[in-house]
Length: 325
Ligand code: TXA
Ligand code: MG
Image: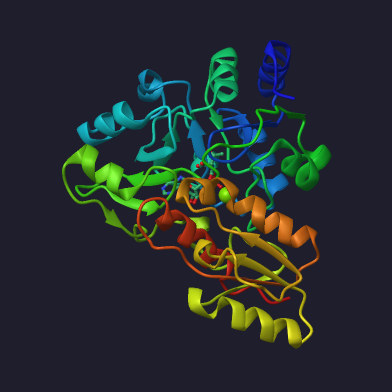
């Protein structure tokens, strides 16, 4: 059930009282707290199990409110905000005094975005301030793209869950650093590199800025319980068969070209032909394979263009080395 006006008012009250609200956005569900309330922000880190040095994204109701939260708005940022907000783009700018260091992990920069979801925008308007909202999952695990994912993973640790239906983009926002000369993609996401370059009329670099902590860039992030192994698309069937024969419960993320191929595996999800549909479904696929009891997931990377760049980034992180106990 999608949240109604009463739910929005209730959620805004929870934020004002220092509580945590699970908020739908077009990308993934966020775990929202009043950014100016350092105790509430501290609880976000605690509930997620996220180290407090890892900065959060600040969500605002509209581009016209940007000046409340950042020290200045360079022309590049203004142009990108006008073109892509509300939408899956996060801009890293110089921090304004209203954003506590607790929310930026001690950095003098702040990540800001305007989410493109009617429930999130209604909540931000009703609340009147800005919310810090990381994805509403435990640190390192698969991001939630439905309200039920949040309930299942965080349960009572969240004070109120606003249900806004399934997320339409399905992967997180694209984070772009605009504090130095060349705009740089710090995390690929829902706005593509091609769209950014078309808007700016110049190349945009991809890479993480040195010295900036981006947890999404660490090994093993966005990871299901099952171990994820990436192979060439042409090797998916053979790898699945051999892992299955070795006694694994194999989950396969099947490339669209192999949609009709006979697969020997415990569970199979077939990648939709459009990258937009793949992005929308990706985290749900990983959850589904976990739920069906797979201990190993075999997948291949899509072409790294358009939304394929973000999908490949998440699959690589999901396949990254796990911390050893
Ligand atoms: O789509 C999204 O961005 C979702 C929804 C809820 O809005 N949020 C999200 O938040 O993905 P989270 O916390 O899971 O990821 C935030 C990312 C992290 O990789 C963090 O390091 C980066 O944003 N970040 C935040 N502030 C930053 C800063 N000042 N400089 C560089 N990266 C920053
Ligand atoms: Mg996250």
